[in-house]
Amino acid sequence: MFKLPPLILASGSPRRAEILNAVGWDFVKDVTEVDESEIAGESPQDYVSRLAVEKARAVAVRRAGQLVLGADTTVVLNGAIIGKPVDVEDAKAMLRRLSGNEHEVLTGVALVRDNVFRTAVEHTSVRFDQLTEDDVQFLVDYGEPLDKAGAYAVQAQAALFIRGIVGDYWNVVGLPVNLVYRLAAEIQ
Image (cartoon, rainbow, N blue to C red):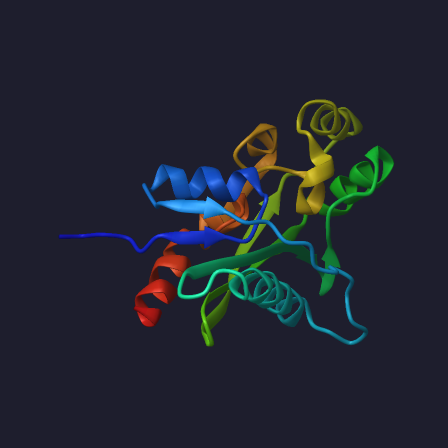
């Protein structure tokens, strides 16, 4: 009989919880705080991987024997990390930078059980239409940009302006659940 292993989700992200719920994965949230500052010279891939591992390990120390999932998502444009906007003006600036361009969404995923861990990074390419100032204002007014890397949600208003996606759609939403499934199978 098919059964997914129960998870401890080391994330407060409502989108990650929604994705796990949608596929029927039993989980409990156990959120931890980690310093999300970039390290000088760190690549975007190393950045998301490091944060995913730090989140998972911080929770795993108090969850002996349980499978802990840590994840971190960022947007990358021309090699530069575009995180979550600090305010509305920052969100507008991010959306203007993404306008008419292709960018990458990277999610670092780490699964930890005691001292055994698996980690990987999912890459997905997203292309935006050219945005007008009215489009940018619409996304800021209705898209709730402040808690999202790149200031947009592919599954909401931003879908109107996304020309194409190459790779895992769920990665852009916030959790590449297929990758999580494959890594979990390695730890069983």
